[in-house]
Image: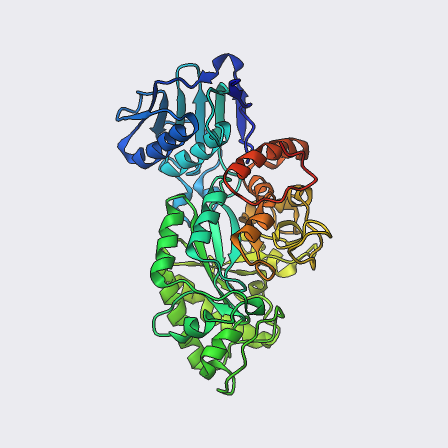
Length: 510
């Protein structure tokens, strides 16, 4: 079999700096070893297992950092970065390493003697490992040559996310773990779980058993086709599983709208105390918690406390969208009471951008999701110092159809092909919301038309790879033709992993 050699920059997301050296290629031999500091032992074992799988050869582990053909070095990335924590007020303490560099910054050095991964944190080493993984074959090969040279890399935005809607259709722990594995390879580092909506409630809450007895029972979900819920232990296990892959879970409890299932389960939370019928259609905007009842805030605080206790990450999403049946003053009253509760329990509140209509706590984060070319409320929030997550539906909503013949998805925001998902810039999307105001980007995937993990994969891939590069790579370095060619090479990798990606005709798949 011919030796397999990829070009050093043939990865997604495209690294910040790629300096090839064809004279320094590394040929993988039978004498394979991985060395790492004790603090990086788990990552060393991940690399060793990857090498065992693609080479079919034994891989030894050594304790010295400078021994072995593959070396994993902590605090070895000495690149002088212009960025420092004061330039990005993200409150996630994991965003930066001890030297003030982005925690995901890393370098890879490949020469004829060794392959070295360097970073100031394990988070950076994990990012380096995902890059190296794309330079290796996905399936065993007789002979493997890694391209020589040096990669120096760091993310453009601290927050690069995707969202999975469990409320309209429930996906169980195994499916969520599989999705986490897939997104981590693209350096997506946040998974937003939409846990509640009119059609279902998907997380167990102490003291409120009917939320899941009713909201996770038979007949829930759009068309009644998606029952199920996560126990507290299952959720905690998923949070830990994601954290081991440097993915932060962002839980969403949507309110004050999108709460019909809450009021089915607990009629005392309606305006008149009377039961409401369950609904499994996909309409929005008809339900609301009652801003003038103290029972509302007792319920909300119990939920926020429980979800915060289960979630070690820094964020809690409170929804806030499409509250059409909540009078504007009631909406503002509700948010004045509820948004500070996130801070009370140690979280930064994220909300869909409608929350910008209220007085926001200093750390609150609006998430823009609409398709209009401007939004005064979000611009005003940015001017006041709030960070923004950019998720315009016409560029990032993974539930939009690829084209008119797509068997799944919606089209209210238009058709969303791969090039359209790639060829835009978050800092240009809204007037008044520039680079300095952006926490990052997120690609939501709503599940009205989805019924399986295969459906999730079909809608997410390959467009999520485009959003991953939008969020990671400097805007000046992104170019569609280059991305298109690199994306084509991911096809065989996804096929080998059993990912049901959409073979878009925009890409000449290998």
